[in-house]
Length: 134
Image (cartoon, rainbow, N blue to C red):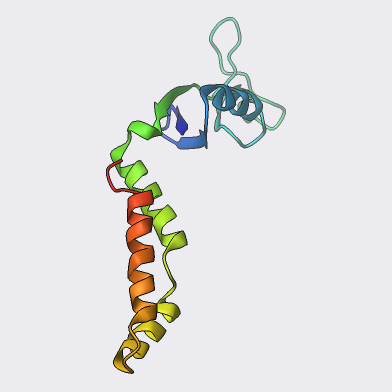
């Protein structure tokens, strides 16, 4: 997983995640130039003598210029926090839900530990499937 970050001159950050750098490049090319995607800046217009040009209402004539920005591509597989969050996300999706756990605990109280044992084995299998720090 890779992330491209765009930061404009004002420090506004945008980003996009994708599997490959090629996908990021395609996204970036489709993103640039779309109205309201990247902040734009307004520059006053001056004549050859350096005098501010005003419109018929006495307001400065401005030129809309695309914002300057920088990009950075980051390999998220090297980001320990990002990968840890992904592991936790995957584990959470496969863990038994709270209702199943409560039911299993009540059954233990009634002398039937089988369901809780099954849940504990399932949790251990998930931990092996998605190890922390891998």
